[in-house]
View 1: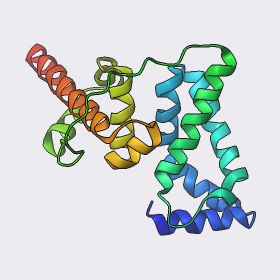
View 2 (view 1 turned 90 degrees about the vertical axis):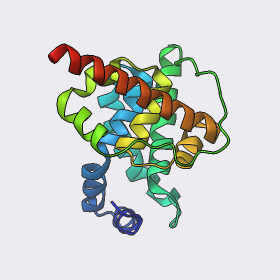
View 3 (view 1 turned 45 degrees about the vertical axis):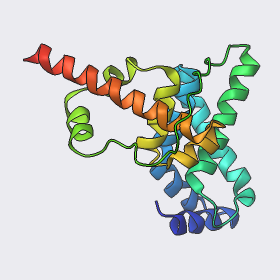
Length: 186
């Protein structure tokens, strides 16, 4: 969903029109679920929080500022909801990865045939199970959320270099995992 479409949907929500919320839900339910699941690691909690997110979005529509980056805004709300949920339950938050800063966050993306082949051959659970929590979170936001490294850094509160490093490391591990699975299959 483009920024203009999102802003039109938010405007509809502000006017009490549930169609705006439905369109946002259909476009972003997967992103929101992946953001909260990455922190909770519990399917039921992630489902509940995803539902709660869209209720909160209805209530917080007035706080969205046009011209902002809507995916980052939504991911930030979802992430805060998941963190609050974990705190209320008294569970530990996932440990942060050690920060390693790169010179800049540009040009580190892996796209194209490898990603398409990977998705075609393996289930998401198989692929993501081999990654560290912080790597999964960055990959989810980058791939499912189609967010830039800067947007991800803002949402996660991590330096840009750390985000790009986590992404590169995650892609490298996925590639290694994929190659092993391919050899096993034969």
